[in-house]
Image (tube, rainbow, N blue to C red; front, side):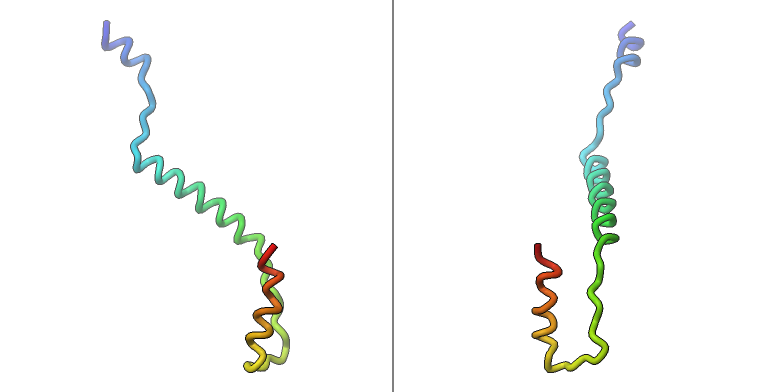
Length: 65
C-alpha cells in the first residue's frame, strides 16, 4: 500500500545541474533578443585614422543612456 501512495505523490526534483542549464538557456535567449535590437552606427565615407579617437568619443552617446 505504501508503494501505491508514493507512486501517486511523486515530487519533481531537479538537480542543481538541470536548474543551471535552464537558467543558462533563459539567459542566452534573453541576450539574443537584446542583440537583435542593436543598431550599428553608420561609418563616415572618408575615414582619417588621426581622427579615430574623436570619432569614437562622438559615438559614446549612442551607447550610453
